[in-house]
Length: 431
Image (cartoon, rainbow, N blue to C red; front, side, top):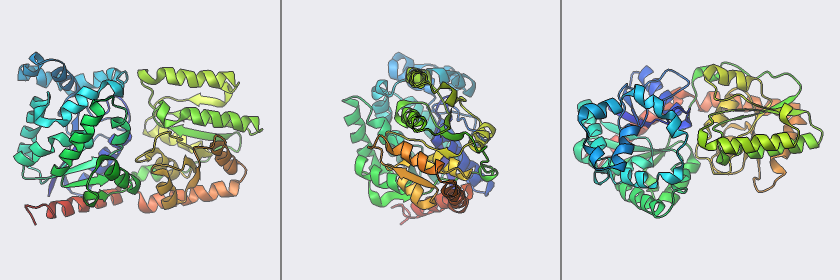
């Protein structure tokens, strides 16, 4: 069986989906599987060696130009190939950091329209490359690309699989009429998808309900971490108690909630500080500045530190210095990759009781949940760990052991490959 996995690059940002897709591809290749990872939009960026091919399809520059002008949809092929060059596309990460989801409605709908959209030439180039590869399975990166599934089915004798990655957060922010159009196109395109892969059981059900996807075609494949993510165990100094946040700096991921909890804890007499790290795009800088202003107004500037975006080694150093971790998202998270990374380092987590977090906590016993509707609940959850070193140690050990047992890259790869085999075998043409 030969698989081509398509992965949507996120410009210059470390993205949870990109990290997962890259680790999955690298592990499958190491296991001797015939898989090719092809990036879309921009080259993939990972904190590990990148496992993707050099060529980029649906390059972000061409996709944008084709959306803007009918004339630009007929550029010479040599020009389009130059615009799709990885070196050039790596330079657009600053533009990606300035783009609002609300401004992407027309482009999203156009791509979902497949060969009827403005990116028809991009689709033709991708299909040409896939014909040369002759895959048995093509894995789409997310629901935003389901619009090309019908053309892939028509042109390739391959099973079409789509990974579910939290698309509701994106689609629900699109303005009307684009949101309604995108929802309708996704539901229509689902008929051409042989199987969907969800990284959590929570999101499998949620995506089925939210987008009208057939529940019987959604398969659960857990996330997995590399062996080196389990190499070290957190060993912070006794004081001060250090709380960590690792994720993109943006309103929906809840950094402000954690800063509020820090203030409440200090008011109650706790000696604690907050260490943060993650990508900060230009569009979210005003939000981050407002968070910093609030920290200064409360006199907490000596208890707050932002380390910027960290690579693999920097991430391990960051996690090693934490007593507790929290990613207190306002939205319902589909995955929760940083939570697994924290638990892999033996750091107990404090998470809101929504989205994928209850599932992850139940599976690992590596943390506590809190009610996000209660303003005191996050600080109380953190205080419970500060007050009980034995509980903190127990949760950290349980989380680390569960990740090592159930959330490794090897297990993820084996489960995903078995899923591909089942989907391929159950295709109508193979039944």
